[in-house]
Length: 168
Image (cartoon, rainbow, N blue to C red; front, side, top):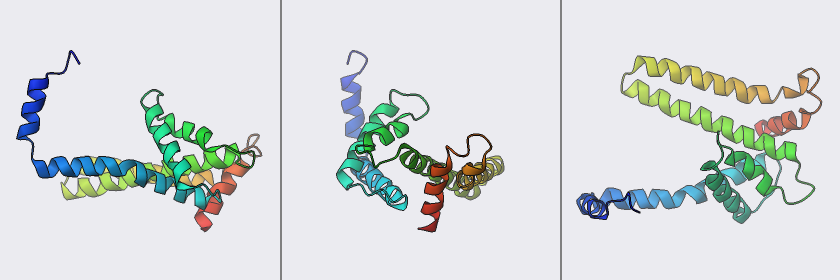
């Protein structure tokens, strides 16, 4: 707290628009429940039935570990947190995690694409299109990982999860 200027903080808080402050707090409170619901939906697509409370705990664990681990390692930690019985296979949970990450990148690239079109940023539009294309190809490529020579046999459960998710 020696780097925090409490007087300046309180002054900025007094000058803040109350409407936006309340909206920001409300949005922050919704992050974990919405992420838990989304994780549960992805798990259900992979035929893994987890309750909402373990999904919420896994999301909180993943968010906390994202602060410590590089390259969004908390998302992989969610897999370890969710695996609490022998019937939960690592490959199934990892495949679901990869699909979730792929759809995150795809969604963000579409948001960037629409924003760049609205604000007329041609270079950003090209980059967003390439990112969306790459994410889409990556998501579709997961379904074909079982055909990779040498390691394809090990990755066949991952492909099965992706195919199951697309069928649902």
